[in-house]
Each structure stands twice: as structure tokens, then as C-alpha cells.
Length: 261
Ligand SMILES: [Zn+2]
Ligand SMILES: [Zn+2]
Image 1 (cartoon, rainbow, N blue to C red):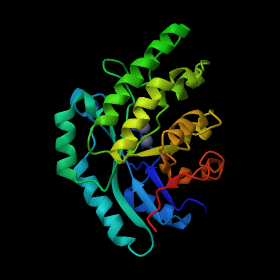
Image 2 (cartoon, protein in one colour):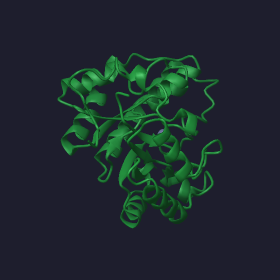
Image 3 (cartoon, helix red, strand yellow):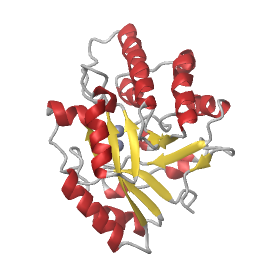
Image 4 (cartoon, rainbow, N blue to C red):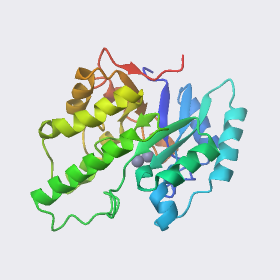
């Protein structure tokens, strides 16, 4: 296996983890698949915790179970007590408190919804015009830039998240037109030493490419970005490491994939 770690894996502690397993079973499954490293990264959507959008996450029990998995699988697979921190710039003080209190091993930074809008997955795009899609995309990139500046994240997750849902609704856009905004975000993470995640869920979700795809990855490379993490974004054990072989043609020579060894 070319990539020996999956750094984006959900367990039953995620609000949308109904097909997922507990941390121990999840990590054990990753071990059986041959991985040496796994980051358990359940959703901590900070706005949801405060605005009660989804069922809240029990971070104390989760930490206990992640550490138990880490302990029980020692010598087989290294388990990271990670988190997928979402929308933290909407409530920065609360986000800082979470980071301080739980002392996560690995933090993904995600933006699933822009301020005052639902998750991109839940928007009704029926009456959206091309201008509406583009306006929302630009709002997303501006907020993602704020998120990229936030201290405490290790990897910027699924940078092109909205496009997953745009595509499902029949709209695609030319990323090269947004080079200025994209490069601002990429330049920021490069300067901060934050990794860029290459998320393989795009292959399972009809995009036929990872998030982000070649266009963004080459911008990143040209700016001097080299540090990549790979993640499946699995919400069920069978998807751990899914489509990682397909990432090889995107993660070309010159990138450094996070590898503990
Ligand atoms: Zn996510
Ligand atoms: Zn995720």
C-alpha cells in the first residue's frame, strides 16, 4: 500500500455516523486493512454545538474511547485522537476552548457551511442560477481564508467541498478563474505549516476526482506547497482507505505525504 495512513475517519460519535463503528472497532478495521496510522476525526461543528443543528457530540466519552483504542492497539496501529473541527471562525473563542480542553493529536479544519447558510449538503439548489452558485462559492472561499488563518489546525480538509454538491445538482465551475482567492488560502497554509488534505471521497461521490483536484493541487505545488495528508472521509469501516490507489495520479512526485515513519 502506497499510503500507510488514513487521516480522515469518522466513528459512531459523528452525528452522521449511523453506519460507523466505535473507535476501537474502526481502528482495528484500519489495522486489518494494513494501515499503520489512523486519525479518528469525528465532526465537531462548532456552530452546531452552539446553535443545536445536529445531535451534540460527547467529547469526553469519545476521548476515553479513542485513548482506549490507542492503548489496546499499541504495536499494531497508531491511533490518533483527532477531530474534524468545522466552522470554527464562526465561534472562535469556543473553538479555542475545545482545542485547549481536549488536546487533540490531529485537527482537520473544515467549512461545511458559510455563516447564516445551511451545510452545502443541505441547500436546496432548485432555483439556483449560475450567478447564485458563483456568488456562494466566492463567499465560501472568503470564509475559508479566515478559517485557514485560524491557529490550531493541522490540515485543511476537502478544500472544494461545495463542488461535491454543485456537481450533484448539475453545476460545475472553472477553478482557474478563482486562482487569486485559492492562492490566498493556499499561501496562508503554506506559511503556517498546515498540510493540505487530499480527500478521496470525491471518487465515491460522483466527482471522479479527489477534493481538491489537479487544478488546485498544481496551484499549491507552484506556490511551494509540498505537505499533503490523505483521508478517505469514511463514515463506515469498509470505506477506510477507499480509492487511495486512485490518488496516486494526483499526488505526484514532489509532494510529501504525511507519513509517521
Ligand atoms: Zn467534512
Ligand atoms: Zn469528514
